[in-house]
Length: 404
Ligand code: PLP
Image 1 (cartoon, rainbow, N blue to C red):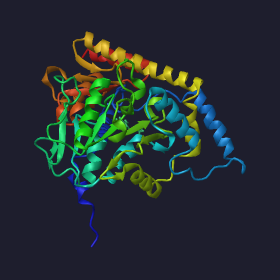
Image 2: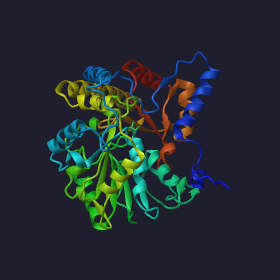
Image 3: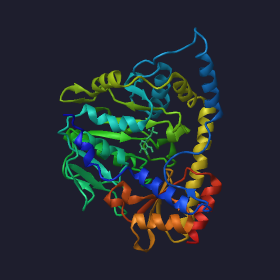
């Protein structure tokens, strides 16, 4: 008889954003006149930069002619894109990453969800708490997380690294040594970052213990302060212990176009086996490449004009972030994040739980945000607001929250 993968049955409830969507739909149906403002899901709202649009048009036209038509992309991605990434994202920052250590994909979510496949199911993972849910859920599906305890909101075989106000929302090095360590800086959901010296401690820890760091740098483009590393490969020894994920989604508004990449240095080995070769094998078997036209669009992000236009978009979102941060702080909320990341992490007022505050915000201010507890037990009594809305709706949402 057919059996399902019963690891899926261990996943608690539905995916965070489905639950939020359902609550909002129900509220909107019951209150058709409510003007709801969305500061919940981390999707961008600004249109694609003109330089990128022009590259898209050009590459679409190439597809119309036999001489320039492109079929399947090369396994690792087109060289024109991998070369420019290696130069501008890595070499220019002093990182020793070559073009053939870059795997182009259709986004960071698939990559950071799929990467666990190349590791033994016996490995123990460590995650920040709160955390981007994909890291934990993908390990639950693979049978690596153990069983879920509804009372604590934790899986029995996952090492949780609490990120609290006390540690500045950046985890302490775990006492119990994990095999795989998921780190994400700038962080979703808290907006926290770590200094280069602090990240170096993580790299040293991983090398000392033989752990692998899975470093999600999807929000790297939002870093505004000097001492914050843009890549884990800025730390010495990281090529021996770290895999890095990047995304064009938040960097250049590609959430709908879909483009990202994963970096695996060739020297990174586990039990003498090259992780690069395992991921190359996986990529070749299960993935057929991001579209040519999207990779051309990605390349355009690195031209002078493209970079400038993208910087302006990021500055726009960060203007929103500063507005939320300053406005809510002045109104008496306890806020963090929002300086090197497009997320503001706020403590719920009046001791409300995250979901209670979600309901209050939705029904009183008609503003949608994301309950911190949806990202893990240490997110309870916290709430995430995203800066990806328009300036107008951000200003209005903050006004409404001040008057709640
Ligand atoms: N990693 C983090 C931390 C994210 O917050 C997101 C999206 O919200 C992703 C990865 C997914 O990025 P992509 O759109 O490239 O799949």
